[in-house]
Each structure stands twice: as C-alpha cells, then as structure tokens.
Amino acid sequence: MADGFVAWHHERMKLVFSAEVRRAKQAGRPLVALETSVLAQGLPYPRNLEAAARCEAAVRRAGATPAAIAVIGGALHVGLDEAQTRALAKGTGLLKLGSRDLAIAVAQRRTGGTTVSATCELAARAGISVFATGGLGGVHRGVAEDLDISQDLPAIARWPVAVVCAGAKSVLDLPKTLELLETLGVPVIGVGTNELPGFYSRETGLALEHRVEDASGAAKVLNARRALGQGGLVFAVPPPEETALPRAEVERHLKGALALAKQRGISGKAATPFLLGELVRRTKGRTLEANLALLENNARFAGALAVAAQEG
Ligand code: PSU
Ligand code: MN
Image: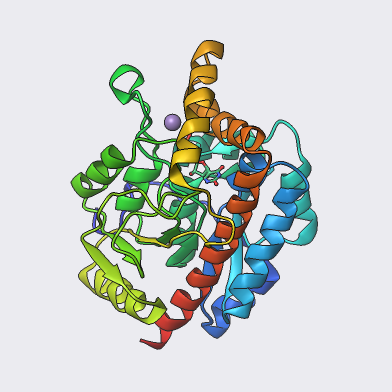
C-alpha cells in the first residue's frame, strides 16, 4: 500500500501526544522521535534515566523537540513527561515492544518500551520523520542455525522515517545486516565516514557506498527520499572518540558473552539485552559509557537533521 498501511476496515487507534509535542506539531516545529526499549530493557537504572535526559537535552539544543515513544497502559504515547519516563526506567515486568507486539499491548492495556521497529511505526503515524536510537537490531551471529533477524530491518524499509544510529549493535553479524538492508532497499549513509560504524567502536572495516558530511547533506537525502515516496533510511554516525572502544577488544569480550548466552539457552528477545549487559560487566562499565555517549551524539545529530530537513 502506497501509504504503508494495511487497509483494515476499522477506525485507527488514536495517539496520545504530550502537551509539548502537540504544541510543536501545531507550530510546525521539527520533532525527533526517541525509542524507549533502551530505557526499559537496554540500560540499567539509573543510567537509563540519565541517557533519556541527555538525549532530550541534545535534541533541544539542536533546536528540535524530543518525542519519546512508549505504550503505557495500552495507550500509544508520543512524548513523555518526567513521571512517565521514570516509570519506564524503573519499572519491572515492562514489555519489549516491537511492531508485532503493539496489538497485544493495546488490547491487554500493558506497558512497555518500544524498540526501533515499533518506534519507526508510531513515529510515522505521528508524522515525525527523524528518529534517534543507539544501534539497530539486525542479523544475529549464528543466523543459519536460529534465524534470528530483528524486525527493526523490515520496519525501517516500511515506515518513512530517517533512523540516526551508530551502526548496528556490535553483537550482530554486520556484513549480513548490511546485505539484508540492501535487499530491503534501505539506504545506509555514513555521516562523515566511508565505513559502517561499529556501535561501541568507530570502525568495522565494512565499506559504505554513500556518505554525507553533515546534517544539511543528510537533510537533502531525506527530503529526496520523501519526494520519491519511499520508505525509511539509515544515517550511521560514528560514536564519540573519547568513549569508543577498540573493535578487537569488543570482539574479545563478545566471544565470551556469546558462549555464555548459548550455554544458558538465552535466545530470541532476551538475546540483545543479555549480550549488552554482559559486555558492560566484562568491560567494567566502559561499553555503558560508550552507549550513553553515542545515544546523546545521535540525538544531537537527529535534532540538527530535523531542523535542516524542514529548512531545506
Ligand atoms: N540499542 C541499544 N540498546 C538497546 C537496543 C538498541 O543500545 O536496547 C534495542 C533497540 O530498541 C532495538 C532492539 O530495536 O534492541 C533490537 O532488539 P532485537 O535484536 O531483539 O530485535
Ligand atoms: Mn531477535
């Protein structure tokens, strides 16, 4: 379907906008969507709250309005207040919501953080075309055995949203993730780099075909993609130098973490949070600092992109 919606014969569920996001929409000011699975599952309390505050501040400094997306008691929220953010950061038993989980969360009035797939979907519904996250989900290592491929990838292809990230998460099979993005017709554009960034590390050795130098170059591509009526695209921003880890070191720790996951039978949805947590432990918190810094950096770039896209 041209607009990306399946034609169910039913009234579409309403979004709940925060007062700030509603005002920004009415005034036509640029908005940046933020995911909340990183809050509910990806980072430990209270550093997750700090991450949310740093991302929102970075978007604001760039001149845009942050719109964190989550499902609370079955309602689809776009823009969260402090109490809602805190509840997602502190809560236990919160759902990790990909697109396929949204209907269940709505019907059963559940609460959870949205991953990249659900955030792209709800951002598109809200008319927000720029979204900042940490790292994409993608094709997991050992995919030949377990067929674990994140729904992030088809969701980005489907929903017309620019996803700003530091590449795909280091725990993945990055060459296969890039191949699948190509198959899905999703452009991956390096920001000031010819190489796919490696989330915790700046380098991967994987060449990207296309690059832009800055937010204004990125905005031109985003606006062309929009004018073509195509789906989402990915802007890959290298993580900040001061906190990035050497790739070889991440790989070394990852080997141990992957072996432990296998031994404990941890797979599916639990795999990503487990592996990220193990890496934090094994690097004595250095991957945690890197994660916070890259989230903030991506939010800053997404803010600048949202502003430039509107001016262009
Ligand atoms: N990046 C992070 N922490 C996270 C995630 C990404 O730094 O927790 C989340 C994102 O929400 C992403 C999800 O969409 O992990 C992917 O999970 P899976 O591999 O199960 O699809
Ligand atoms: Mn998965």
